[in-house]
Length: 181
Image (cartoon, rainbow, N blue to C red; front, side):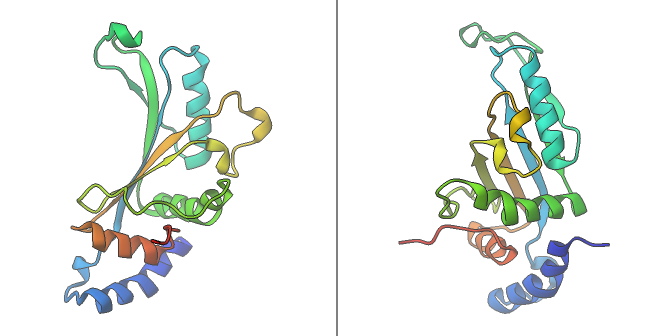
């Protein structure tokens, strides 16, 4: 069974984009390629911090993350080579659509004083990056069991060649962008 958001993409978003952008080929229509979720953990924290981050990210995404390690030693940051500094997971296909649906429908509206996300976080190639300050906005995380609040970066990679096309695509997919004043 296909995710709800994928069916919306096929039935509503593709025809709307073909009409507004005058695409002649179906392959010109932007689509989501992957979502990368990254959690950086301070190297100076205790050893259990990385394990907590992995556990939280596994609950949020449904996939076991890869632990990122430092490439070289930097004395000013108290960082040693091959020391764990974070974790990341890449979501594709059905899992990506399910995560995006949960992010847009339940997680983002749970942010305190939420008025929409910025439209200025595009990278110039149609990809959107979003920083979340607290992992407790996701309903999968139980507030009683977390030891520390942890932020994360979410990058949505699209096939759109420009930021304008990606913005229109993400708006049609249901991303709650803030209105310009």
